[in-house]
Image (tube, rainbow, N blue to C red; front, side, top):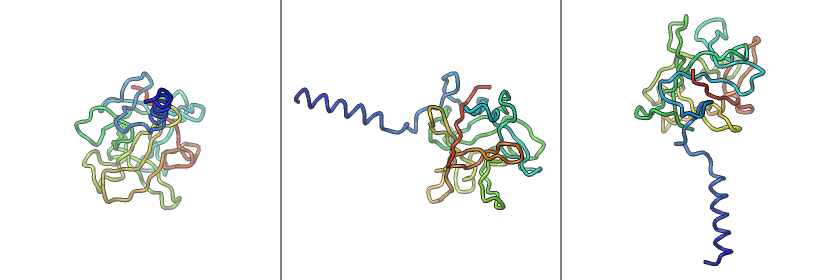
Length: 200
């Protein structure tokens, strides 16, 4: 092979590798650079710190189920959470893979603290609430699975479950809606919200 052709081929391979999206088996890392682990407590904090703190639970409609919101004070880490990947044999949290998100906290509502997506029919918006079911991937638990993806050098949360081959779920990145003086987590594809993960 001629030297010029070799150099051009090498350059093409380098740029091709850079253009590839993040691999689905790439691990998610916390603010210390450590890989996120199943069953370990973390805080999910916005990287835009001037509008609120970490994720917590509040009563959006004044009653159960509780909804996921940003803590009011930027210095507030919110409530600790755990991640439970779909594959029971997977002890690390990886990009673009289905996982349950579970608050490690007790609430006054007699329900699980597993995240799920719920439609507010009055507003026509999808919000993240608790009361989901952990594990048992499939049609019956479709609304309970979320993903983490790379975004602007950090991460974003996404709802687009692939635990059911024939289902056609709504898909979108999670952002925040301001309502009643609070920031509520829901599908907002136009403005995905950047997050980071801090070990509790």
